[in-house]
Image (cartoon, rainbow, N blue to C red; front, side, top):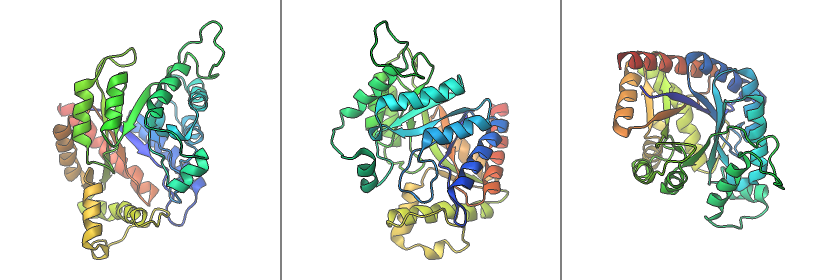
Length: 333
């Protein structure tokens, strides 16, 4: 059975605040570490009232201090928002504090709306060619310093920080293949080009000093509970959040509701079915079957599991149920 990892956006539930969300993230990371999950990644989002992981490197330092063995990383850093040297220094610092545990996933999207992107970058100048150049510049800062090198990342130089390319289209797949880097696809909210991107990445992959063969990680929403009915109830928080975001009303993560179907018009229902198609929601047997089918159908090398639940203890329980199923499937395999 392929490895499972965790993607946490540090959701801020209605009735709570960012500090508690970040404490919940550290608690979830400790929990996931004890259950055997491979990685715990956090993602950069801005101007989102329901997401506390905007300062991703700072949030990861908090999580890293609360854990000891699980890999921590960014899924991802939106590189157009940052100077590559600054990112190298931030993740070099994390790698110096937590040796052998830090991943750096890089994305091309802004991770925000256009107003926030302008506020972060001060302008939106540039073209698509900037991203590959910035990725290569950033990776160079992690190489050992050369005699007479004038510009250095300290901490950062000479440290082992695996770089991943993130994407929700074929663009990232082509870049990851050309550079010989691992690739993570955001199928948990943008599944449209998942299979096409995977095929391009694997067909065009060029082995590198960083990676000898292609490695694809897919995002998937998994909401596990003792029963199918409870899992579907918990899932309504994410459904409401997506609807609010697509309607231009982003907010904190809503509490689950019993009457979700009655709140959906045909357009909203179609949007959710499409955007959240890579979701497995149910009791243990439903999740077991869904997990097996998803892995068999996609051929993924690793899954990055996310579960934005309003109740923190229910979220921890979901990852516990999933870990147990994963162990059973691994033993059977």
